[in-house]
Length: 116
Image (cartoon, rainbow, N blue to C red; front, side, top):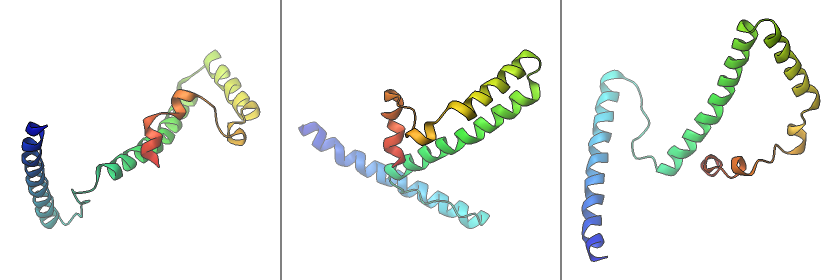
């Protein structure tokens, strides 16, 4: 514990110096390019929230891209199987009405704690 108490202020001071240097670099880059960047000293919790929203949003883009690829490049029996799957999905899946699919490992994933 004594060693931890001695090292912790040094680490904290070094981290603050690094953040200040990074913030100065971003400010000078912003001044020279005219682009406004986000501040460097945003808390980790907020950065995690932003990352979770980015992952969730990119899931929609990925799903749309995969559907377009499937429609464009699948021919023959693969395409008909894909159409049957889409028909089943539209007719029989009611996750949006039932409150979602109860998969415990997915519902307890850390990303949902970041998302809130």
